Length: 193
Image (tube, rainbow, N blue to C red):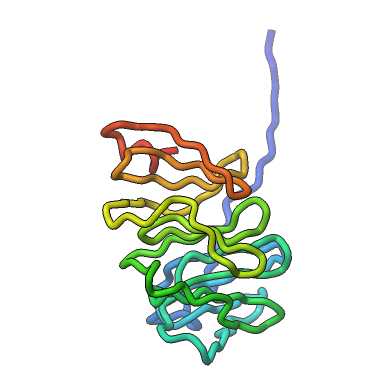
């Protein structure tokens, strides 16, 4: 028996955007929102790409222009932070200071994400949740020996995940609730998930 099969496929495509507009800029994060807008976190601030132009989102309150951890809340706002503890909201073509993390919570590293219910969660010396009224709730107490690795990424169950190297645990966060899984001596497993 002879079987004849003909298959059609799409050829590979490749395109480059921002080669000139983003020249000499260090890009730290990219985010594609529900409105099909691309956001670029850089050492020069945040750029919005609408499919035609890169627009630098000016924010007079920004102490340091290097921004990181772009994330959206699914309600039209995109957030990012800088290492000075400032969290910014990008909405309706404006950038504004959303929250200044108190100095008492600051650490040399800030990791940020958006929970399933739209609340900002950030890790410094501890793990914190920003409530709708901008009050900060402590999820994991401050401890300078906390060693959070990676970023607050969402898994297939819409839980944010973060690795604490000190306790050798992956922390799963959803709607302000947490669960833990231990991985003794295996920090590399977190990055492979």
